[in-house]
Length: 71
Image 1 (cartoon, rainbow, N blue to C red):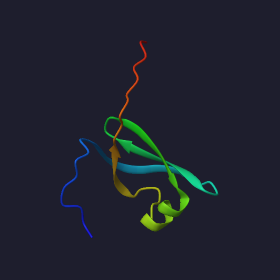
Image 2: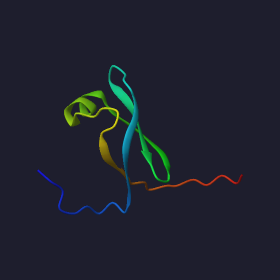
Image 3: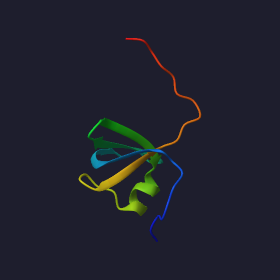
Image 4: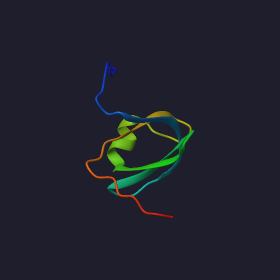
């Protein structure tokens, strides 16, 4: 199966930099040209996708709320 189209506009192509495995959920750090994007997904999904350090992926960011903090 391949994705023909998707409505998510915030897409960041990158490579898996690190995976921190947990019993139920895992953290996946994706290195993109714009910085690191971290996703928390089920460990089962990490295994089903065959993710490992160096895997090429697309991080899809969909949010109904984005907070801003002034630096």
